[in-house]
Amino acid sequence: SLPGHPFFNYKESQFIFRLQRARPSVIPSFFTRASELLRNLNLEDLQVVPILKHHLTPWKSHGLRFLNPFKTFDKANTAPEVYQQLFADHRDVYHNFIPIFTDGSKSSLSTSFACVFSNSTLSFQIHSSSSIFTAEITAILHALSEISSGPPDNFIIYSDSLSALESMTSLHRFSHPLTFNILELHDHLTFKGFSILFCWIPSHVGIPGNELADNLAKSATINLNSPVPVKDVKNYIKSILHSKWQAQWDCKDTIKLHSIKLLIVGPVYLPGSSTQFLPDYESDTLNSRIGICYWGNPHLFVQHAIAK
Image 1 (cartoon, one colour):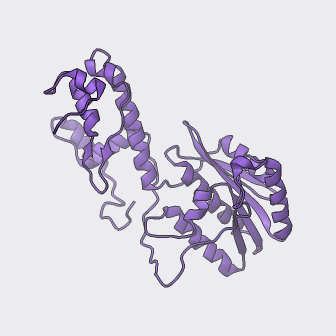
Image 2 (cartoon, helix red, strand yellow):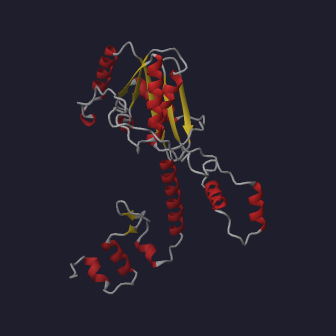
Image 3 (cartoon, helix red, strand yellow):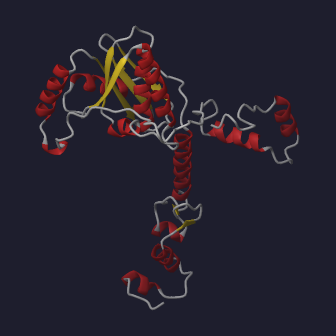
């Protein structure tokens, strides 16, 4: 993900692979081991979003603003018909802006997004390691990319992802990498004469464009080979390894600890540290119940206080 890294474009030669296969007693190189791991995780052909240096100056505002005509309404206590009327009033004000609706979707099997234009629609599946946040951001970026090939006009992009829109308002060096692409493309289109607005809309309240985008995103079948942020890839790998760890633990039903702790909980990390730990009480309880601590089980079962 770092273009300046010496091994960014490195590809191990077939000669090295043949040499290592001919000598199985020799430990394979790091790149061979990493390649095998990526192949087992179905990540061998995955493209990662490059992490580029963005010069964000403190004296200039970096980010985009978005409209939110529904911010004074609580979705839990507001009828869908009210939102529909508010949206109709909003469209009356911005009737000279062409609407574009975007949405992202993620299930256990796939991640996808959709864009609904005034005279066409499109929907794509992206790599399953992508988060729902990445799907929402990709949908907005793809909408901007589609209108860039046409003549300059007024457009307003609607999204039901408040987090995606808020991430575009204040960029910093830890922002999602695709938000920088959105800002760059937006500035380029503005320079060409486009007028582009962004607006948040609530989901599942009967707004036609949003409902269509939601259905198209869920039913997308065409694969789009788009790059994935490295953070999403890391979380995806952690999730797969945790699932495999849990599957292996489920087979250890003869171990005493298995009957006590059925589910494996991921490690807890101290802030800013790579050291993992269990809470004192949980660690003491597990040790006591499997018989490897200095005091008896009844104390921890009834949770009486103990002097330290």
